[in-house]
Every structure is written in C-alpha cells, then in structure tokens.
Length: 258
Image (tube, rainbow, N blue to C red):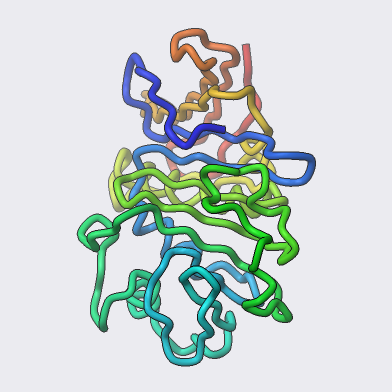
C-alpha cells in the first residue's frame, strides 16, 4: 500500500481509515486526520508484553540496547517500566523529561516502532527488516523478529498500525471514535457502548486505496453512525451501513445495510 492516499473527499467524515491485507498474515490500518499523540499514548498502554524496538534513530535510554543502524531495543515492561506515558513519549522522541507533542517535536521523518518478543536480540535486526515499514509494509511483520505490532506516526495527523490480530487493530479505532462521540454529543451525554464484535467487523480488509468513513448523526429520537466505504476514486460508494443507538446511552446496534 502507498503511505499517502491523496483522495479528495466530498465531505469531512468524523473518522476516516483504511484496512488492507499486507501479505498472507498481516493487516495494516491507515488512520487519517487523527491526533497521533493520542495514538502513540494509546499504543504504549496496550497490554503487549515483550520488548519495544524503536526503529527511528534516537538516543538509547538507560536500560535499553542500541540497534544496528540506529534506534534502540528495550524491555516492555521491564527496563522502561515505571515511566509515566509522557516520559515514555519523551524517550521515544529523544527528548528530555517533560511533555512532548509529536507535532512540535521536530521529527525529521516518521516515528517507527515494533513490539517484539522478550528473547529478541539487537543482532536479530541485522538484514531482517526493510529500510522503512512504509516502503515495504508487506514485510513489516514478516521478519525474523516476529513482531506482534508495528506503528508508524507521521507527526502530522497520519498513522499506520500493523498487526495480525483484527481485535488488536480495532483498539486503535475505539478510542478515536469515542472521542468523536464525546465531541459531537457533549461531554456529559451518555455514550452508546461500542460492541467489540462490531468494531472488529470494521477491520475487514478492503480493496487497495479504498477508505471507510464514519459520520455521526444526532437524530430526534436516536443517534446514528453512518459507515460508507469509498473506492480509490474517492467518489464511488461501494458499501453503506448504519449503526443506531438510543439517546440515553445503551449500545450501538450494528449491521443495518442497504
């Protein structure tokens, strides 16, 4: 898949993403116009044990080991355990203590991360990874280090997540969608529950270049979430679906389609 999808949309959806098959075992989730700081912090809080490999050249923190070609490998949790999320973000971006936002961090290129097993060694990365996960997404999870999760952040509102498990990918949709719900319906409004199975269904692979758009609607007697899948031309609507939920909370009823 191409890292950039220059598609002109008729209207601005509340959430825009694409899910693609990258080889026989991996999926990629392309998130557009999101808060990539929140994506990074959400990834750091996932229950993914083992080690984190920072592929972006940055200073090696205490308790971590340098990787060939730049970046570092650290136990997760373990040597880096005990840091709060802001401190971890600062480590990943090569900054000192303090809150750092990706958009003001002065990144020279995308931030690329892999979550790998506890037994992986720095030398295992020699000749096993592509120069960039974005350049060779089909190889992002196919290397000898058998990563479980990959993350690429542009620093300007674009993110790509690589995973084999659709449920793991779905976690990166739930929080942005919940944030949009709170913004659209008001901070004090009861939010409909997001069924795990419904979110996982959104992780089905799509045709190359196609996008899924989620648009929230606050109707007189209920709330609605419109889901449209557009082909690569940005105009042709391939599939439509509607989720509905009570105004007083409840849960989304997914799967209405036409």
